[in-house]
Image 1: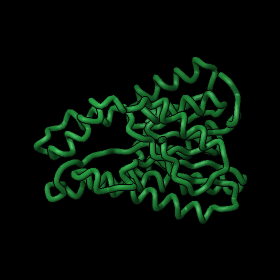
Image 2 (image 1 turned 30 degrees about the vertical axis):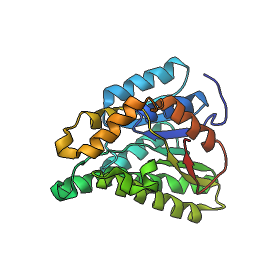
Image 3 (image 1 turned 90 degrees about the horizontal axis):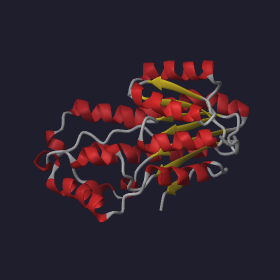
Image 4 (image 1 turned 135 degrees about the vertical axis):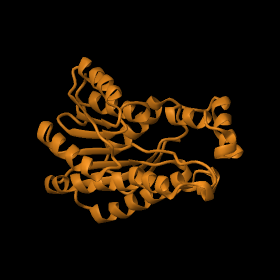
Length: 252
């Protein structure tokens, strides 16, 4: 385990049990950060934590639902107590459901997606911001999607496109508020990554979610253009070492 830009820093990564979140967490740990790993699946978190510790790093696995504000408060309290104040926050956890024609979607499912994709990251950010501002240093990165630049490109995923667009608006507005504080907040668009989310969409019934949407994800897999989570994470890690604030980082 090497010590580098984040030696001694405390990082919190949501959706850290697999895919991009796992790769980001391992990268932060390699850079010397003590990493709090968060997702709803405890077994996956424990496996990632074991990887970090095997390399000589510090990891805390906390199973929590970022769509539940009470769990977020408990999460931040535990991380602060066991590792220290959060100095690096990567809001990566998200859901792509509900999929399908909007007229067929249960509004309760749409609302829950918004809680996970927007309210969760906002709540976490507001919880960790005061000590960041007090110390004069902090890094927040909100993982978005390229679809935020072109919402009409993913018809049948209204909740996902709307919430990712909202997350970006929140990020860029907050960055202006934080200018000059030493705390930065930026957007990361991770690209088309070979993740469990991609696989889940490919397994859905085309008639239920829409043929065009289903074919879009089948084609992405067959084209061979999907990148690895590690490649995507490396771009974020390179950017977050700097002082940029209020930017949209695109993996490409």
